[in-house]
Image 1 (cartoon, helix red, strand yellow):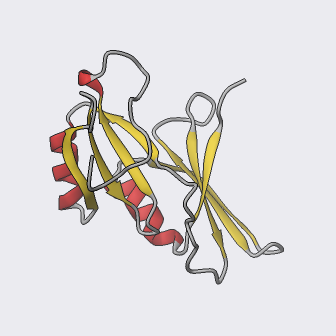
Image 2: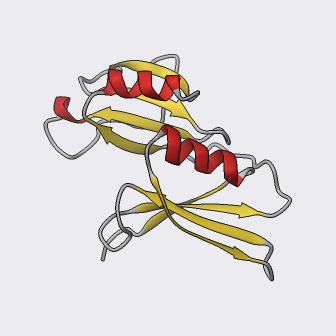
Length: 144
């Protein structure tokens, strides 16, 4: 078994694709409209679906906003240089909601960005981690 994808419902597919592809550097792997169901699926990621876990962006036609609820946490992406990555995201118009720095009660260097729908994306400095496990949990922007 392996994890295939995570699905996010988005209110504006073009804005979401711009964020994930242009700001975060993912590739649009496939996109398909489903007129009978009035929705579009777009899959984005950093590699082919055969070998990588990807994001499924689901746009339900005519639905522009979702209540994210309080159960959702975040997506995590490992980066080689968190400071340069945050600067590049900022230069592309991305919103940094937690500047890079050590996480509260730990040493892992993290930052958070927010996508157009309000979903949080955690950036984790890869070179500062001792293992492939993240120390992070749900972002508490005031404390982390």
